[in-house]
Length: 116
Length: 113
Image (cartoon, rainbow over all chains, first blue to last red; front, side, top):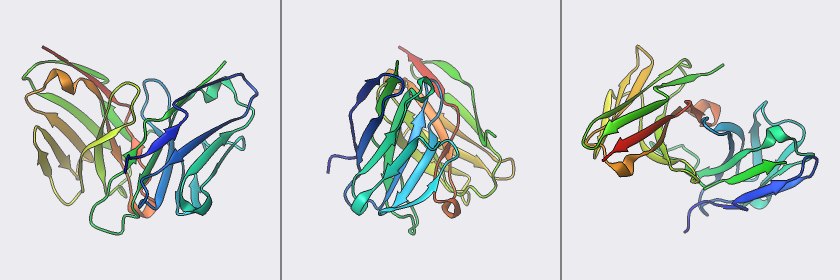
């Protein structure tokens, strides 16, 4: 088990292009979360999945953003028609469904997106 | 609406000193309060966490103090080391709301040797 893996680590794209990021969670974790972090700020929640079901999307997630988690394993986050304001670190985290007494997220190292 | 407010934004402490970071929250439904440590280019890593049924939790050099009535919690880093230089985030979540984390704005800590 190598933790949560995110690819690519860095992405530079031109405004208006589409980009897709991938997250591979810890294998036994059934919950997967996406967050966005801009420079000097704390991460902000975007969306989360339990297995393959997308249970919630933040209002931050405009129609240009879409996330999937086919078969409840890896997840992809796609941004269409990128804008300069989309430049940020996109973080993925996974956890066990917290029905027990304790739990914790494991975050990946993120994908840094720069839109030029 | 910023639901978790963190202070100070930055902190300089001498090696061996104590670093104290404070957070205040608004949502009384929060039931889990973790602290994360983040190094440049890395994702946040869970440091220590507390639930509202206890007032203090200690793990090694790290202690969380929790005041439910004041809706405040703080992180104390004892015997600060240069390797502790990082950005620290408090966060809060609610099981009823899917355990999505609401983060504070972060505190950049620099420990001088």
